[in-house]
Image (tube, rainbow, N blue to C red; front, top):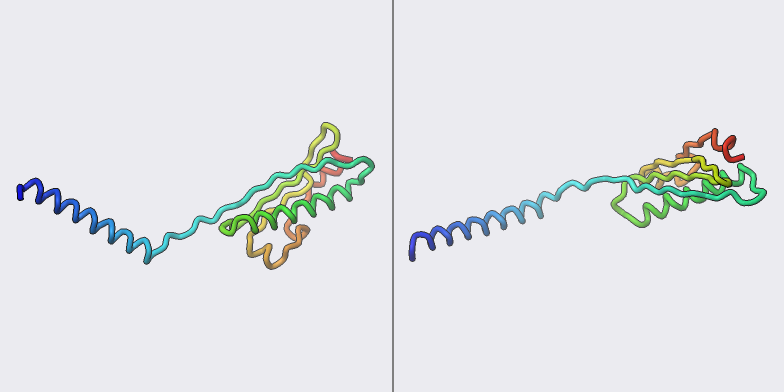
Length: 126
């Protein structure tokens, strides 16, 4: 067998063996998962003759559903972030936002517990 063939065969075996060892290492020592946030932006149009309090309640319900859907849809997501914006005519303003971890939500799935309310929305949308 020529020298270059022996070298090529040895090199190929070395690559194959290192690939096998890498594969075993990857199987034995799994890589850590990367946590990430699912972000949802919602917009609600104010209904005719609807009070701001009613619009805010609809925003809470929509945010609750969005957080739950986010966690149900993607089991790897560790956090969910939802912003609900209200619209009246040509005006828009954020009503509330929720940023919550999966564990927090599992323990207490109440949007009012995790929501940040924007007080200026009432002035802008009323």
